[in-house]
Image (cartoon, rainbow, N blue to C red; front, side, top):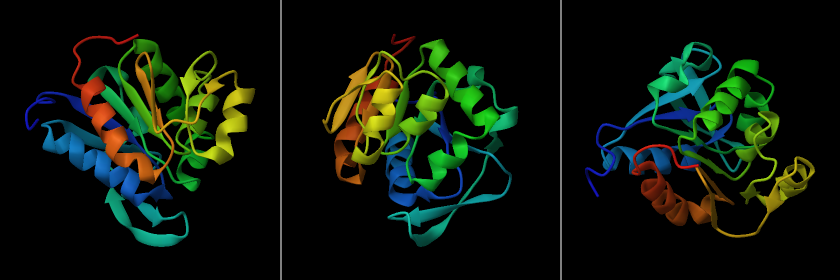
Length: 185
């Protein structure tokens, strides 16, 4: 497992309010498998993390501004949660465009909890089978997605998951999908 993602570059798109555990645990799993991860965000410096959306939980340094990032530089994309985080991303044209363009490549994308809000805004949820945190399932249905209540759902190049409770299954699924070569649509 230590080398299954050697040579892979994974973009993690997040903003202030990201749920600490949903960035930290998948990122560590990716790095433990040999991937290089880069945190993309809306502003330079650091982003503020949260625990349970409410409690300040430290910061993460931003590696690349999403406005200057190229989808061609990455093999996979991770969209972590935190209600404030995806709410900021979905009103950021550069973030929305990055997600839309990334999905168009057929490269692997993984999103957990409220992360699919950005998929909705990017116009890439329609016709997909997805799961999410219960409070945004109506938003997904209204965007044309087929919504199911499962710990992890894979639809082609896209993996979605419900909540921090599902992180072990989510991390396992992203390891499997991200280790595949080529497009997965």
